[in-house]
Length: 309
Image 1: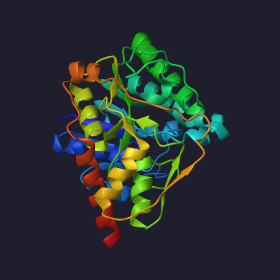
Image 2: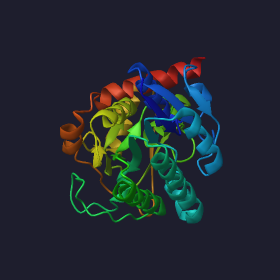
Image 3: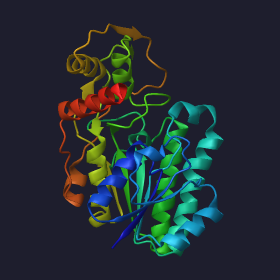
Image 4: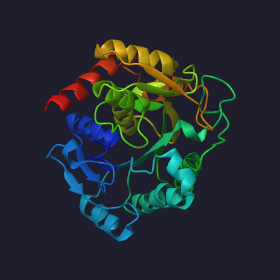
């Protein structure tokens, strides 16, 4: 049986990936320091290590014991705002942490390194939808740290023969996403709706995002283990949804009345984003299977049930 080591595996996206791999009969080991993740997100039929990816000695013990065939690297500092306030910490987690895992993956002959990257590496779009050949020009330190990690990954292939698949995610949403801190707008809106609070939109609401359901991301990671070799691929729906339209749909799904309050746009906010997904469709034999409405309904149901418990 093949084995995957998932960093950040107790987090929002990582835990969905873990469940997907277990369903596909892939053995799973999870590394997570629980700074954002929660062990309750995971089933009991996997190995769990409460370890920080900056602790190279403890990481090496895990590689020695588990001998993973694959590494799926999800652990990261993901707050754009935090990266702007403390770029050194952001670089330490996102770049040095990735380097620790790359060194150990090469040393212990990992077959493939799957990396969770981001649309933030592209910066302000020159055209839409953004394909993988779009210039990388990040406008946040978070985007810089992810792009730097991508470069290290490619060089580890060149110098150490470590195969990889870099996946640049659109705006991921779904069950288990934390509505606090640097959360996605969908989990924040749902949290406010269920708390009978107004929905707050920064800007005129016409700004668009490419929202992709977390189960489609988990399936993309699984297929990257099988099919993606030394590729950089967008995982997205290639669909634009405005924030105002999103708010109206969520109000309808919830059956609650909530005023929508508009505030001044946040500085540096990208007006529109949409990622082309043709390469992932062709190279991974993948396609998003959830429409936005299906994903929103499942997500709303999850949070509504959680409130009742």
